[in-house]
Image 1 (cartoon, rainbow, N blue to C red):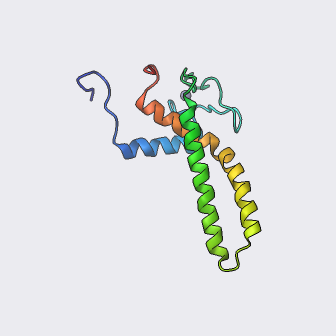
Image 2: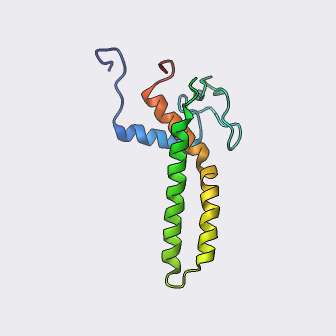
Image 3: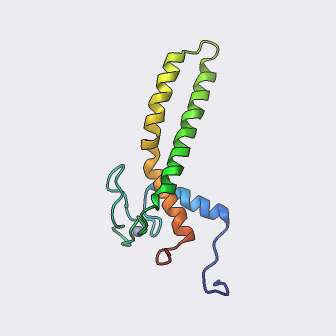
Length: 135
Ligand SMILES: [Zn+2]
C-alpha cells in the first residue's frame, strides 16, 4: 500500500536482509533477480542483460561501501579461521603453518568474497534507493 507521499513502504528488515543475501549468493541482478551482471569473477558488467540497469548506479564513490563490506567479511573469515585452526591443533600448534595459512587466507578471502559482497551492497542500495530514484 502506498504511503501518504506515494512511495511504497519497505518490507520488514529480515525480509530485506534475506532477499539481499539470496541475491548476493546468486551473483545476479538485484533489480530483476535473473540477469547475470558479472562478466567475470572480478568484472562487473556495464548493464544487466535482462533489465538493463547499470550496476554502478552513476556514482563514482558507490563501491566504497562494497569494498568496506568485502574487507570486513574477508578479515572476519580470516580471524575466525585462525582461531578455529589454533583450537583444533591445541596444544601442539604448528605456528609456522598457522602463520602462513593465515597470510594466504588474508590475501585470498577478499578476492573470493568480492562478487558476493559487491552484489550484497548493490542489493541493499537498490532496496533503499530503487532504480530511477538514485538521487
Ligand atoms: Zn536486471
